[in-house]
Image (cartoon, rainbow, N blue to C red; front, side, top):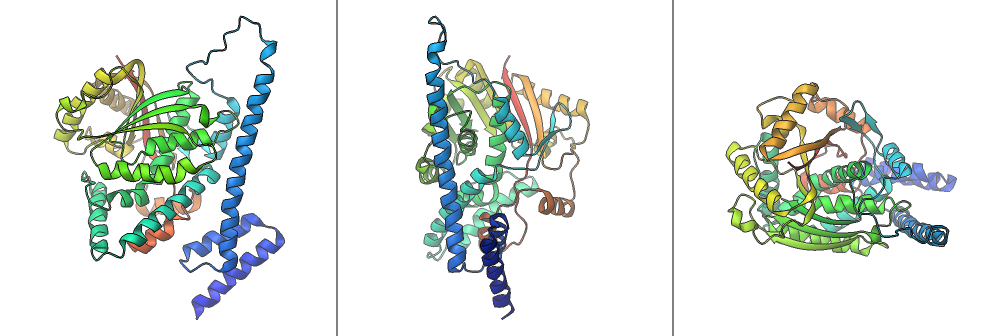
Length: 438
């Protein structure tokens, strides 16, 4: 009875907020209703559909604005001298307006040359991604839940990924592992990937034609992060002008398949989808080096290794040997290697504890890079808290609830299937390390 009264009160508040024209308050109330896991009323469903329609309209307006900008630039071509070379430059010149907007949206605060606090987000584009992801997972789980072994399969996948909390390397081999990854880590890792591409763009190293090798690619978080970055910056960059060859090297075919399945359902249905051409290589990174001989030589502009760092020393040494082989064989002469590694994992690899010490930090990163035969270009440490020392779980939970962007659409699914009531936010504590061949 009490639940019905609370539900009715929330619905009334939503109605009154809409009647007053206070859409932001109505958005907040709708998120509160979704968190309560109650069935949406007719008005609530209509408002949710309206928000999604508004987003699609914004995307269309962005496309029109981009086309107007192109038309304007074309109309000015005659004013240049006839000998001017109009051939496309390889690298994009960073736009100060784009840099300023993203810095403001993500609330990026540079404490020093290498430490960046991040507590914000581009809500429009990430909410749309999250909404589509939640629908994708719900559709898949509704079909699978009819099977007798669904709960057992889900438990196996959850327990496997839980090993990360205890310093164990997961297998990622269970049937539902891709979905558990989607729920727990995908959005946060895409958030980090977006910021990594932004830093590459900001330093003037992003070309319009990219050949990318993603090692231990999972479902393709790095290509999703690049897609969101390009489509969210419509005024300075037209995502349809980019041509991306994306090579996924991943041990688990299930991750590659589910990543592509969601890409086709979400990205390819956008008004202005990113031009990405996929190639999938299902291969064990820790296998024999001959496994990599079919990969193209001297081809890739960027080789990316994101969150693929092993706790076990023997596995890490084997991976580093294969990394070196791949870099020497496949990276272009002027190409780059991007590492994204969690702070704790980076320092644990050297039996050290992360602390606020620039000289220690620099020496660890330099040793890490030199072990793989590369030279450092730059590194940044992106953290939600703005400090190197770790908070206690209780302290971070309070900080996340008060300061970090919430995941409104994934949270109810997380509660439903994992029976956990924890607050789910976008958070980051990763090193972005850019390197080149010596």
